[in-house]
Length: 295
Image (tube, rainbow, N blue to C red; front, side, top):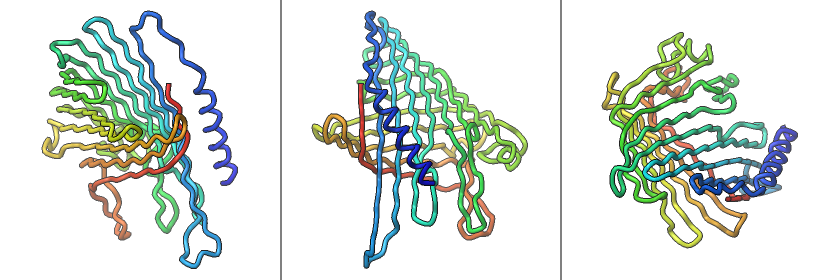
């Protein structure tokens, strides 16, 4: 387990060093490329501590890149977000604490000062297996492409600035993909048992708002909503992420983040051992200090 954590840390340092190679400049000025590479650590240790405590260590890698094109009234914004994290607690071992692959693409044609006609696509999945850890052992609940979510459709957007934008699609397709046989046979993530996917058609909203609270402190909000016209449209899929960034200097930062998801089609097993599952609010929190490099 220690070797796995050491390998994870060495990979993080190597990738951080490599990321400091300057990006190529597009002389046509139509493409703009921005990137942010972050390595966060969180550690606690106790030795002969009267109050008690559990030794713990966590490391997280996060890559956030923007590839944007603009020519006259046409724009094409692309975002890639990759995140992975491991944590180790005394007597428990190494477990995953973050795992995400998010790809966003938005083509827009300017209709008015702040309004655009748009076509957007969003894809989300993860890198590795995810488990729950009941007393009897561990149980597989997710893996790469199980689930995966693909959402796309035409719409319109209000973009006041790069820090405030809202995209609305009244006719958006959403495909839930579950490629793992064990999970698909169990009907995980809302697919029919034995099926690999579930097609939905409805309305979506994607909103982004970032505000600078102080010179070195910013607060980011990301909201995704989806209503499936074909099945219980009143049960709106909701995904809200809040991130607080505190910049210490050019390379050191403190990040705190929380994500809240409600998905009526995703069932979570109860903790009482009854074997029953229900739809509940999912919450994930991450806090750490580390290295950040932007370009």
